[in-house]
Image 1 (tube, rainbow, N blue to C red):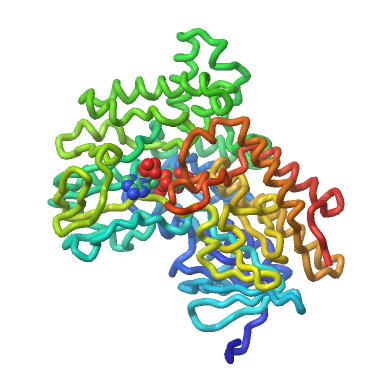
Image 2: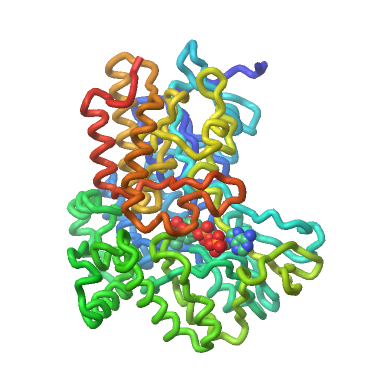
Amino acid sequence: MTDVSPEAADIVVIGAGFSGMYALHRLGGDYRVVCLEAGDGVGGTWYWNRYPGARVDIESAEYSYGFDDALQQEWRWPELFAAQPDLERYANHVADRFGLRDRIRLSTRVTRMRFDESANLWHVWTDRGGYLVCRYVIAATGSLNASNTPPWPGRENFAGQVLHTTEWPREGVDFRGKRVGLVGTGSSGVQAAPIIAEQAEHLFVFQRTPAFSMPSGNRPVDPDYERDWKANYPERRKQMLQTYGASLVKYPTLSALECSKEEQDRILEEAWHSRSAFQLLVAFRDVLTDMAANDVVCEFVRGKIRQIVNDPRTAELLCPTTYPIGGKRLCIDNGYYGMFNRDNVTLVDARAAPITAFCEEGLRTMETTWPLDVIVLATGFDALTGAMTRIDIEGEGGMRLREKWQSGPTTYLGSMVAGFPNLFMIHGPMTPSAQAQMITTGEWQVDWTARIIEEMTRDGKTRIQTDETAERWWQDELSQVASATVHRHADSWYRGSNIDGKADVFMIYVGGFVRFAELCNAALDEGYRGFTRL
Ligand code: N01
């Protein structure tokens, strides 16, 4: 197959993002672990997404590692919501502090994997030419890593620059004096737009579907806030794992429909200023399960948009009306709606007149041509499955993962796929993914995976696999909890419906992190239910 001699490892971790680095740290003491990373630096999501305005949408006190108390006591976040450079600095600090660098191969993309059934070993090829042979692979490839670029023709004709938010030049971009077209109004577009508007001669925001967004309330961290978190970290980390989204918000018991209008407004006003998107989505117990209750929150946010945006036509265009709040990821912003009051910002309705092509001058829509100097694509990701299906993964009997997943992903507990033994995913499809705070839940999933590997070693086993019965059970569980929520009423990357030709199936576990963790633990505690160990 190849004349290069393989390198042996116990475990290959794919990705040096936050989960991959923790997997390397967690298992690296007892096993020979090699971590392969496509980027030339660590940090994963926070390495790639360096567009202007990129920052976390959950407070950094929560969205940070909890596995090492000295780390959380010593590290200082400058702002409540850390910006990308601070998150990347944190990732580098962790790599150095825990001595991870010598086992991370940067600029090394995994291109192909094949399971050797006779030896129960994975062969892992990279674009660097060599290959590794290992017992286990942990794919810490992230939920949002494979970027989506619309297939418009004519890119070669455009004289200006085309950028994607997920592949931003390290040296940054100077927008001064430029006419900038920003396509996409999800979390990335909503964060980037206000910063670009401050620099550009003119910013045209091409909106196909308006986003719901709420203000982050970001500010520098004050000493009392920091002291309070540091005094309570261990307890709060435990509490996070006992919540729906691994995030500390208030979980009210009231239904939106049993409150008076005044009471609804008071509760929603508080949630609007809570600095937590989760809080707005659980302001009442039924926001995510009842369309009428959901609409109370939608109408509240639409009211905010109409208050903030001066031009009534622009305000109406910015008001989402076609899907429930929370059906798509709720954005959290720093001045997005207010930005439309600037003279140098124009909202373009890319639903009424869809973009059809790049052209020499800029972008062409069904109606007209928009002259531009720079085009920024904030068009999102082939989410959840893309990172895995872009690798050529061959399991038992020559089965290819991308073929198996053609009609949508199948997994057991979001961790393993039938036909692909000894391969684990972190934040894979059918996990809570972005429905929960991802650093903490990533750590949890790594610990759970580490337990499996350690018990395999203890018991002298070399192969663990799941089967289609277990996959069907997990699919039923996922569908059942999803059918009780409003998510099915929105097109989004949660369903793959943002990608042309991708199977439209709901891919996120929305039963809450607590239930997810209980089911994962129960499977192991009750004799590795759904798994076979050989
Ligand atoms: O991607 P998206 P994103 N013509 O898929 C539009 C996380 N995140 O990168 O809705 C015109 O949400 C598309 O329109 P439509 C977070 O979990 C977190 O912004 O498909 N428009 C949509 O408006 C988030 O949910 C953070 O009609 C086109 C946009 O592009 C996830 O990443 C920051 C188009 C894509 O929105 C993804 O966010 C950033 C076309 N042909 C991201 N194709 C934080 O932590 C697509 N669009 C803060």
